[in-house]
Length: 154
Length: 320
View 1 (cartoon, rainbow over the protein chains, first blue to last red):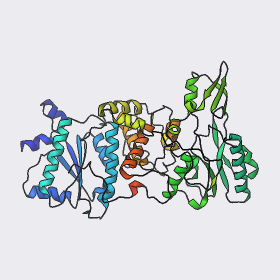
View 2 (cartoon, rainbow over the protein chains, first blue to last red; view 1 turned 90 degrees about the vertical axis):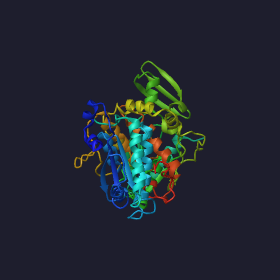
View 3 (cartoon, chains in turn yellow, green; view 1 turned 30 degrees about the vertical axis):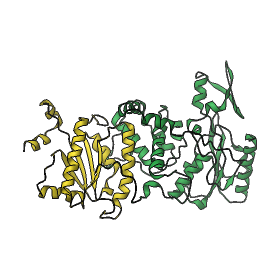
């Protein structure tokens, strides 16, 4: 519970007490990754409470604006997760998205936004364990980077 | 030997013929500008006016922007890069292939006025003449002859398609392509730096941006009726020149031209703050080349890379 409380504190408050916990926004597709996260919950698989979930119909629905805007708003990390390639509920939404994300990630890193702020993964509805692993990995990566500074609008 | 006068005459001849035979209603080309080293776009609908058309090494504008949204049969003068941007617009169904006559001109590169101005220490140039490989500039207190190859636009130095890949009428002889040109030298140089250095470089460059949107307005591929930066509902990104907003404007701009940009260099030529915009657009070109093995504006049949997918696309960036 204390972890949950910590995660909900605003970054300033956390700073006062010299604790900083990354805040990560997760865009999960309704059909696979959201259900995967749900399964992790039902199965009582533990994962860090640093993520806030936005449920989207498909990873193809995610406009690169969402991800850039999240960074501008001061989220320390972004996680995008959809169905495995070939398993998309809408047949090819995640495949089109994969090309968009590849270009976006390349450009963001080229411009100098740290590798690790934007994260992409595939998690199916049956992979609660995997979801927890992905979240742990992302939280670890973002923790190592520290609070987001670049692109954040002050 | 390519002769500019000859090309100019041939252009006029072609334009006259097209207009007389009513194959086109309008010819878009260049005319002499009011200042030295300048040309202006020229719209000819009367065969008697074709002698206004000019061709010289200052014909730098990409005219293909004028084709979009005009329902007329148009003949257009196109260098290699211009023809490529027309091809991109045709594949994106913005231009009707049946209604455009591409008058292709093999191009040996256009000169960069800013480089010449810097060479003469910003003195006013009163007269300029480009003959063959030499540029003669004259001002109040100076007269200089400069080698043309040192004063070409940056995009011309790395150009690999000096001859239009697709055109209806070719004026003049083909020029040899420079296959040795290392197009991505600057991109590779930046890529080798650390993320911090790159961030420092881009914040310094893009921090100068005054958000005049000249780069967007001139880009032949920015044809959206309503641009994301003009939208207020939803207000995607602020309209201030706060660093974060400016960076995002440029990030999204290059995202939008990814896989479509033909590196005509129009954006960097018009930038009043002389921002290194090609460092970004070149990167998108490199990404689509490496990831999807695609080069924009070469073929009318290929689907733009971001409008399609393959099941076996590389996904090394996916964490799990």
